[in-house]
Length: 211
Ligand SMILES: O=P(O)(O)OC[C@H]1O[C@H](OP(=O)(O)OP(=O)(O)O)[C@H](O)[C@@H]1O
Ligand SMILES: O=c1cc[nH]c(=O)[nH]1
Ligand SMILES: [Mg+2]
Image (cartoon, rainbow, N blue to C red; front, side, top):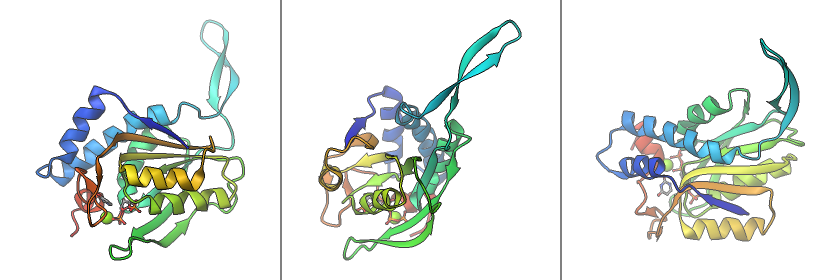
């Protein structure tokens, strides 16, 4: 697994506003989108491209297009949905697949309640969107679904990660170079309810206002 922690003052600024418990849902949603676009810039650094010929008004030149098959973006419902718009703004031609997973807050196991992924992901580059990497159970299940269907590589974009969750994902995938995790920050730890500390609370509730 390769980990990239964004080191940028704009990311740090937006993340601080996101953490503030008094930031209301509309502002929270807007900031999540902006943060994803900044993280996606880094996360798509190795997106596959092909050379094409472009006729400018002046001359013929060599340009770049995204290669086929198109990348697949997979928001993990519910909270990952808040990251989709920011991602597709940068990758408008990507296909989107959906996974619905909810962590059972007693057992901390991730339960899958929706799976709308293409059956065959052979050769596909996949980008998983989930704001919170806490115990890592949700992300591990998501990565497994994608590789089971033949994904070529998986890049996970998260806003916050706990060291415990990162360690579990790393233990699960080992040193394979086709799993990337891009995060805005790695926080201190998990609390007794497996919430990220200092974190930002329940990302789904803060995005969509449900309790
Ligand atoms: O690393 P883990 O310990 O598995 O926890 C992380 C998961 O918890 C949150 O989702 P949640 O289960 O609250 O669902 P929601 O998005 O519907 O709120 C979050 O968005 C991750 O998907
Ligand atoms: O801190 C956490 C942990 C899991 N899910 C969240 O939304 N927040
Ligand atoms: Mg939640």
